Length: 286
Picture 1 (cartoon, rainbow, N blue to C red):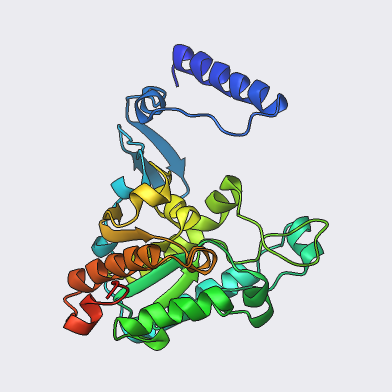
Picture 2 (tube, rainbow, N blue to C red; picture 1 turned 60 degrees about the vertical axis):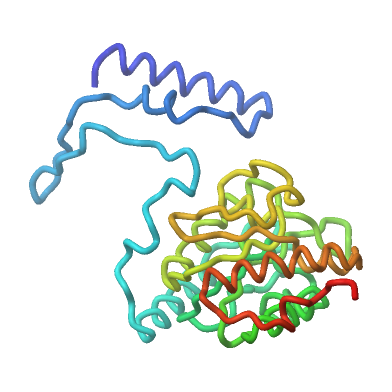
């Protein structure tokens, strides 16, 4: 490692440590700036079995959409998918819980549905009902989601449903209610959702609400109201952002319900599912 490079790296680390001590938790840095810190020469790392060649160049992805395609992953049989999912569940279950989760007594809410699903729904985090049942989307919002899924001609057993967070976020000082996950919680738990997606290899993902979409995209380019209905991408998997069912429970407007249904009809079209005239007319004022 060159002396100039070492000085630059040490200065960068020192600056970040200084920001951390001041309470700064997030720093926006462009991929170009990060790549400039990477030493542009090949180096070798010794090992007991020989030497490992490290590539001379590295790239930093600007968002999750830029990552390697999920479809490039090895295609797994149903049995292999089920086994991999069980192993992932066990891995999460065996993690040491944070003091906050230990204090809240939260239960693991892993995911539900078929590992062979073409369509995957992603929410933000388990709520009080989901924590109690150990299954995502079982409360009032979940019941509404089931009605939406059934309206497409599918059911709970033909899709896969998961959340970015696998445990209900703690609610200090409260005995009921839910809170929105923090950005650091989203980043901490997203790798487990990523592995679920890699195992299932869905053809389409529906992001339910802003938090879920932020997790899938790695950022939120605009508000969910403007983003919904516009196709996005997570590692080459089409992502349809739409409102969270809980929003529909708070907003009983037929116009909003129609927007969500139009989003779902786009999903049906992408999956080559038939759309009847009756379905086309859902939530239209007569």
